[in-house]
Each structure stands twice: as C-alpha cells, then as structure tokens.
Amino acid sequence: MSEAALLTAIVLTFAGLTGLAIGSFLNVLIARTPRLIDAADGGGPAYVLRGLAWPPSQCGHCGQRLSWRDNIPAASWLILRGRCRNCGTAYGARYLFVELAGAAIAITAAAAFGPTGQAVLIALFGMGLLALILIDLEEQLLPDVIVAPLLALGLLWQALYGAGLVDGLLGAAAAFAVLWAIRAAYKLYAGVEGMGFGDLKFAAMLGAWTGLAAIPAALFIAFAAGAVVSLTLMVLGKMRRDTPAPFGPFLAAGALAVLAVPALPAALARLSGF
Ligand SMILES: [Zn+2]
View 1 (spheres, helix red, strand yellow):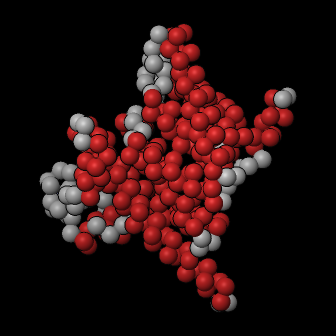
View 2 (spheres, protein in one colour):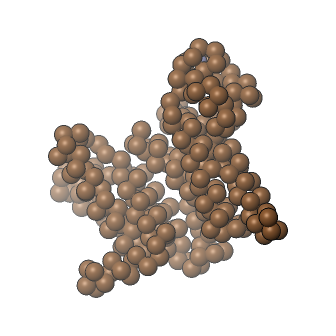
View 3 (cartoon, helix red, strand yellow):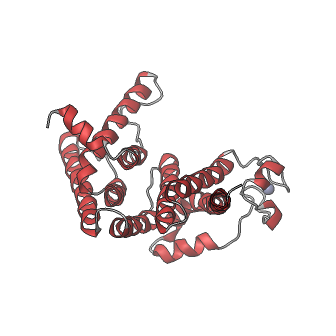
C-alpha cells in the first residue's frame, strides 16, 4: 500500500468511527429534543442542553441504565439485535440506521474534502439535517436548538469556503422572506396556516448554505417535490387534504439538490425561459 493510500484509509476510518459516535448522539437528540422542548416551559436552550447531557442512556421501557458495553455505536445494536439486555424490548431499526448514516455522512465528507475544516463543517451540516428531518417527520417540529447552530455553521462555511459571509446572509434573508410571503398569501386565501413558523427559520438556515443565487431553484424543487409526494399519497388514500404534512424534508431536498449539483439553478432557469 502506498503512503498516500494508507493516509486516505486512516482518514476515512477515523471519519467513519467519529461519524458512528456522533450518530449515536444524534439518536439521543432525536429521541429527547421534542419532549425536552415540551417540558422546558420557558427553561429555554439551557434546559434542553442539560436534558441532552443527563441522564445517561437508559431503556425507554424498563429504565435500566445502559452500561458502556451496551452503548457502543452499531456494535451493541447488532450484538443485542436492537433489544434491551434487561427486559428484551426492541428499540427499532432507526437507532442502527442513524448511527450508520452518521458514519456514511462523515466518510462522504472526508472523501470529498479530505482531512479539512470544510469536511468537518459539511459533515456536521449533513448530520444536523438528518436529525431535523427525522424529528420533523415524527413530530412536525424543527427545534431552534438544532436549527440555530446549523445557521451559524452555514455562515461560517460561506465565509471560509463559499461565496462569502454576505452571500450567506442574503441567502438566509431571501429564503425566509419568500416563504414568509407564501405563508401569508396562503393564510389569506385558505384562512389556515399552511406552513409552520419553524419551516421559515429552517429555510433561512438552508439559504445560508445555498447562498442567494440558488434560492429560486432550491424552493422550486422543494415545492415540486412536496406537490408530487402529497398528490401521490392522496391518490393512494394515505393522506387527506387537511392532514398536516411536514415540509422540512422537502426544503432540505431542494437545498441538498442545488448544493450537490451546482449547475442545477442555471439549468432550471434555462428550462423556464428566463
Ligand atoms: Zn429494558
């Protein structure tokens, strides 16, 4: 093995193991944040952060504290087949999925950007998005305590590696303003809230990462994907017109599409004839 290949192997292994560990923390974040916010009652972010750190992981069914050997990312799940050692309650495959997804995101970022600060920022963005999407799908909630740090990281990334801090700020402001206008128009027309305020703040965070120029394409993809999926679910009878549906995953899909394929906004603009 050449020296360069060995170095790459070490970097990717380190990234994978770190990703597994952070994925394990993401599981805590996903499971606890919504209930901590409900219970905070004015306690604010400090209350939520304390609740994430303590108590240590325990079985949600019998309350047994997980010993270190039952709390090893991925390995413990596979050895115990996703069950509590004490009472045998199944935890669900999501725990393993989130840990493996954390590793996959970290390895992808390290492979694309090498052992750099950029890889760290991109990996944290991907993992934060993963937690937010899963929380939004389950609870229709996009907690500020996760959205706000990702907004700060997006502005930092723009300043260090992107089109500059100003472009990040403009992207955040534009995404927020466009969704605010759409939300206000929908409320005027339909008389009900079509979108939560959390979606606006989430869109602002994504806008910081995409920058100003990509906002129209990202929002077009988000609304198109949302319409296609909602109509499909309605036709299949899995959803009614008035079923509340999380919009966060579609906003995330739009942002990820323009970030992964930088040529997409220009291509969409040509297609639409502008
Ligand atoms: Zn148990």
